[in-house]
Image 1 (cartoon, rainbow, N blue to C red):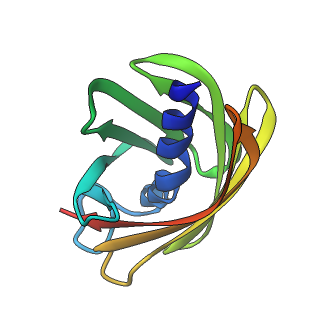
Image 2: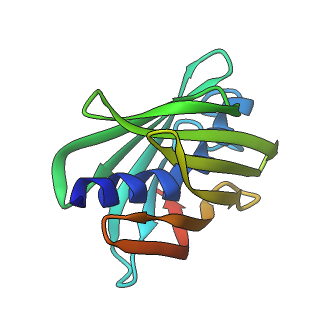
Image 3: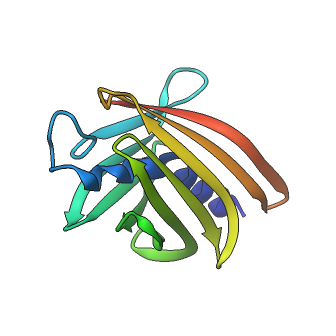
Length: 157
């Protein structure tokens, strides 16, 4: 149960960084090659997300939680609205993300667990790609708790 909540948190908060596939790797005006830290309520970064170009038309996101140092979550997506596998330490979790790019700074995703929709997210990069804001609406129950709506802010390091 706790693992599902952690995985849902990873996925729903950072998916939009996959927009990076639309740009050349490591350019100053793209998120590719960047590491973003999600800002917690106390101002400390508790989770990081690295954005790498994985292949033609694909991006790889790698997440790390400070509280769980040996856990790595990855998502590789073609960014065309197709389900992409969410893996933890290289093993599929049953969770997928279907990510669609709207324009150079906006995207949306549908998050599923075992094929059933869990929720939706939409995200926006600032014009300088230094900040990523993600709005989540997780409608499904995770464990015994409804996740509801939330907003995360990620800052490029």
